[in-house]
Image 1 (cartoon, rainbow, N blue to C red):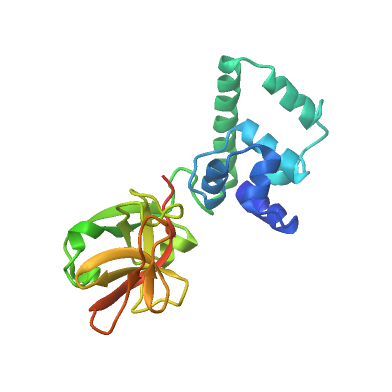
Image 2 (image 1 turned 90 degrees about the vertical axis):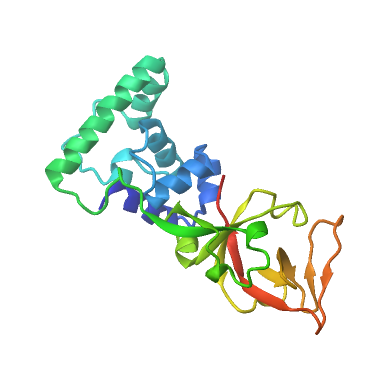
Amino acid sequence: MDWLLNIKKIKKEKNLTNDALSELSGVSVGTLNKLLSGASADPKFSTLCALSDALGVSIDEMTGRKKGGESSFTRNEFFQKYMELDEEGRMATERVLEREHARMLREQSITTYSLDVPQTRTIKLYNIAASAGTGSYLSSSDYTNISVYSTPVTEDADFAVKVYGDSMLPKFSSGDILLIKSAESVDDGEFGIFSVDGESFVKKFGTDRLISLNPDYNDIKLSEYNRIICFGKVLGKLKK
């Protein structure tokens, strides 16, 4: 079993969320998310040490390496020596570690996944303002194909749109890119992309109105006379 699967297995056994593991290890949530999704390159030795300490296991246990004998000094002593190095020394140590790790993978013919090639997918990014009045994002040609990391959320998304304005603060800010799953309707309290009489909005659905989160903006009250289209449900937003 490779080191990534081991980390996920131990993390699950200890019932730790990414946020909790980040707090325990000091590894940023962004770095941890990329690491656990397989999207980042080989982790630094200091990152592995921090994660093994947080998970309460040895480097050997976490990486799945079988020891041929006892080390001349403990992992903590090794980590302490590493931390005492200057920047040049740490970079040299990490270069050796990356080279030897790559050699080990080649020799053991591990082909489960490649750390050098992040898994990505392509989705259409539409412009809300430019698409207003077209009647449907799915029939508009005003989009750009963008590559995103493959995650459960991005895999479920059919397209993406960019937020303009601040009516949905603090949840969504101007410039945020939202991931959308195509849907003809959303449930009460869910966020969606709507067109009302040809103008597009990102809003929270409230049965008889589209709700603005920013108190400086009024809700959009709906009536039988409005031409209302739901383009889809907001699944989340891409991290900047």
